[in-house]
Amino acid sequence: MRTRFVRHLGPAESVIDVAGYGLVALNSLVDAPEGERIDRGELTEDSLRLLDEALTAGPPTFVGLHHPPVDLHVDLMDPIKLTTAEGLAEVLARHGNVVAVLVGHAHTMAITTFAGVPVLVGGGLVSTITTDAEDLPGIDYAQPPSIALHLVGDDHLVTHWRVV
Ligand SMILES: [Fe+2]
Figure 1 (tube, rainbow, N blue to C red):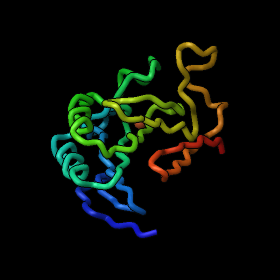
Figure 2 (figure 1 turned 180 degrees about the vertical axis):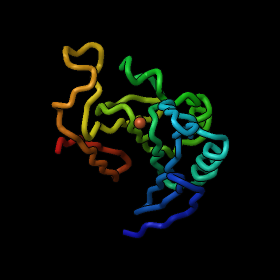
Figure 3 (figure 1 turned 90 degrees about the horizontal axis):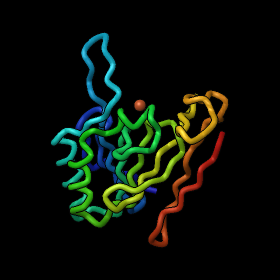
Figure 4 (figure 1 turned 180 degrees about the horizontal axis):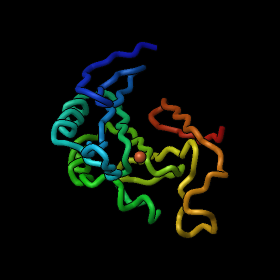
């Protein structure tokens, strides 16, 4: 399997081709002043331009960033999701080759959609953030860490979730 770095813009921002698929990694973290912490996510115009260029005539592509672009019905996390989701939606809507958007941040294995493409949310490693509908602690340290195994081919994606 051959991996090719197509472009590398800076911390956590790369365009990679591997086995006929693309991966565009975008940095949605917001720099905080010394001593402060910013948990919400943003994508810069440069990041969106990188994505737009990579998707143009690109292979079937996964888009990875830290923050979910939509509410997950989790009061703890929804206020600190991606706040520049409209710009991401506009870019995704211009292209038909996005396989899925892969995100983290929310500490809950979840699946949703955004701009017509699947959004797969990775689970937490040390904790799980629960929904308000569950009779569980808001941050549950008793649940095991998890990983997602993405299988592609035959024109579709299958994701298997595993606890580890
Ligand atoms: Fe986070």
